[in-house]
Structure formats: C-alpha cells, structure tokens
Image (cartoon, rainbow, N blue to C red):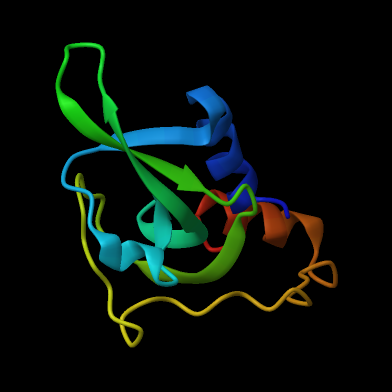
Length: 121
C-alpha cells in the first residue's frame, strides 16, 4: 500500500487500537460491509468492518465501537463530498477496488507528484 492509503493509515494510527466510536450500530454492516475513507474530496480506500461492540463513552453515553480489518484496500477514486455520519452505499454506488497492479512507476516523477497533490493518485 502507499500514497492515499498511507494518509488513512496515519489517521487510524492516531486512534486507540483502530477503534472509532459511532452512534446507531446496525447489524447490516457486518455482512460484508466496509468503511469508505474520503480523502481530498474522493473516496480513496475502504476497510472491512469486522465487528460492532456496545461501549459506554467517556461521558457515560451508549455508543458502538467499530472494529476494522487492519488492511486498507485502495479503491478507484470516486469524487464524494466530505460527510459526517453514516451513508450507505449500494454495490452499484461503491467504488471498485483498485487493481494491485495499478502501478504508475512508468509515469515521470513530476507528473506522479502533481497527480498525487491533486488527489488523483
């Protein structure tokens, strides 16, 4: 993994044990669901959701701990505005996984850097 997935990994590393707290857990996400990560205005990666566990947050409120697979799967970039909260994507709406052989090493370094800065790589 590299590039955009590294950005997601850095965010996740700052969270305790890769756990995010969210309201309103739903069993639907456990049947193959993924969390999609929006970076620089596009969905860039996903992480499989492994489990949902009830927890009590630091203020005594009920919440849901979401356990993620540590593997980040890069996706084809799909423009998407930043959001807060849940959005459910149908299979047709979700971006496809980026092929593991999608290598841009044959591109000139300057072009690769510019495309990465634009969030296109």
